[in-house]
Amino acid sequence: VNTERFHGIYEVFGQCISSSVIRHKTPKICSLCLTENAYCRKIWELAIITACPFHRCLLISKCSKCGRSVSWNRPEVCQCKCGFDFRQSPVSIVPESEMTVADRFYSLFGLRTENESEQFPAPLRDLNVEQLASLLFLFVGQHYNTTDTTGKVVCKKLSNEEMHRRLNEALRVFSEFPANFNTFLSNKLKTAEARAGAKRKYKTSKRRLVFGGFYRAIT
Image (cartoon, rainbow, N blue to C red):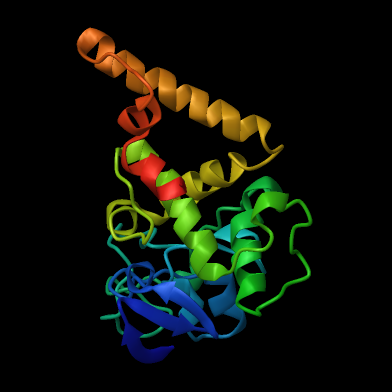
C-alpha cells in the first residue's frame, strides 16, 4: 500500500482506491487461506473484497464461537481472543453467480485466479478499480437513500455479508444491458413519484427532481 495520499486516494497493488474502502479497523479473514498459509492478506482489508476467489467462500468478519468481530488485537494470527482457532471456522460457500465482483477486482489488482468469470457485464469491462468501485457504491447507496461514490457511507454501514449481497445486486443492474438498467431506473422513478405523490408537479426537470444526487452522479 502506498502511504502517500492525495485527496483521500491510496494506491493499492498499483491501483488507485478511495481511502474509505480500506477497512483496517474491521479485519476479515478466509479460514481456508489461513489453513494453507497463516498470514493475513492485505486485500482482505478492502470493503469491495467480500469473498475469496481461491476458495469460493465468504470472508469471515466474526468469530463463530464467541460472536465477536475479528480484531487485530488477538493472541495469534489464527486465534480469536476467546481461544478459538479461526482455521476451524465453518465455511460459507458462495454460488458462482455471486463471485463475479471479487473475481473482477482480483483480476484488476493483478491477482488473477483460474476462476475469473467470463460473464462480467460488457459495459463495465473497461473500468479500472477506482471507477468500478465508485459505480458499484453509487448503486449500493440507492438502497439507503444516499449518493455515495467513494464508499464513505456504505463501507461503514454494512457488514461484509450485506456488502457482498449489495455489490452483487448492483452488478446485476448491468447484466443483460440495457434491459436491467432500464428496469432499475423505471423502478426508482416509480418509487420516487409514489413518495412525492401530489406534492410535486413534474415538468422538464423531472429527472433531476426524482433522481436527485443520483442523477448528478451519472450525468
